[in-house]
Length: 305
Image (cartoon, rainbow, N blue to C red; front, side, top):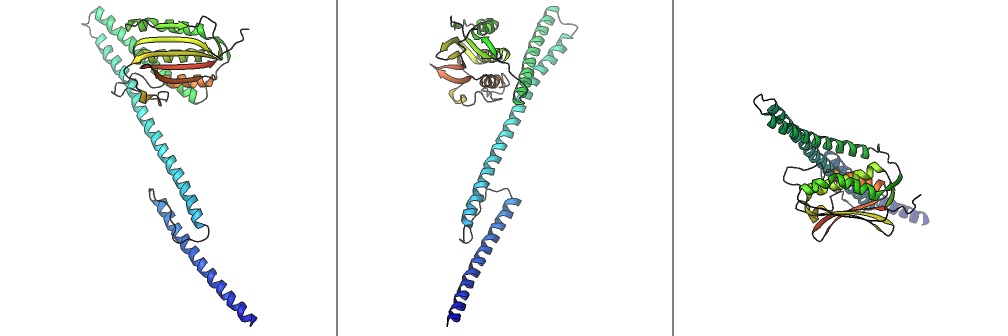
């Protein structure tokens, strides 16, 4: 009697085990077919369950999370590649435009019938185009070195107020030529920071060039101390920068000019951000009373020795 009961229970157990094995087999074959589909086709398909058995549904859910992660990474990579292609197209345009202009003016200078006055005028234009081209190439080379980690910044005590005044004096006439007399306020107290002199001047130059290109008036250049920070704020009215640009304004190759006639590589503010952050500072852009402003902050050095 006992033996019969044992045999009966074993038979039931074997039946249950057979059913479970059959369900596992069906589930695995179902998953295998779906994986083959995913391998051979570019699809957003997600794995599904044929029959609920054991923890296979949890495994399927984990697979789907991994698939979603890689799909998002693929979409991001496609966006980056698209952005790079657009950037390369824009930069090629930036380089080709002055080269085409230079070529045209060189041909005109060679005209034997041209007057000396016109020749000098064309040579001056050529010189200006060469300056533009040199600046574009310098920015590309500098940003490439920054990204590659080849630019090692020095750390020394800088008189930020003096460097700010000296750099601004180089651009002051350019602002006056635009019909604007910039308002300049520099703290009378010494403003010292720790950083690299070349990088700090490059930050100032790029911010001032950006103001020249995109500004339309009411320029204001401020430097002051605020608690433990030395603050630089450059603001101006603009017709080419909008609030929607603020989230991307410091991204490499980003330009607010949508007309097709780009006014820069979109690297000036990106370089300014890289140098600022490497020197332990902060940079932000915002609108203040309808004026576009860029503010840079560096930790102040209160020791003057």
